[in-house]
Length: 164
Image 1 (cartoon, one colour):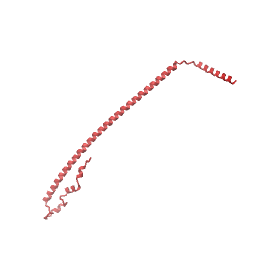
Image 2: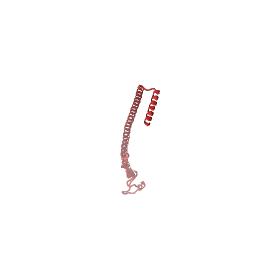
Image 3: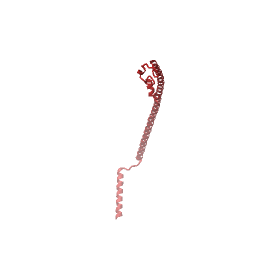
Image 4: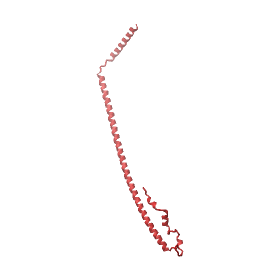
């Protein structure tokens, strides 16, 4: 976007011509002597020339002012459009953040349900093991030690018989 494109039409020579009184760029003292001839200009001619140049420069300035206002309007429209685009982008980002929060909370909720059901299944399995172990017939401790001792004695006597 060319914000200051209206300045490209203004040339240094145009400004210099506007600032100077005549085409020849001669100082005012040069015209004050009272010679006659084609180069001689009177104060009235100088004033008419200055008025003509001032009017031309006024028209040029008005055209440039119009271009400046046009560029200013374009700049204002550009900034308004940019602000609207930024608002749209920010609203999309806010929607994305809300979606991420929702997905994260759903994932955490699913993980909690899975963990709690896993713990409940383990607890059920342990309870079933205890019921099965309670239903088994367990020999008293003394009987178990006596049976172990008896088995040892029988093995030792068998060894002795094989060795003899």
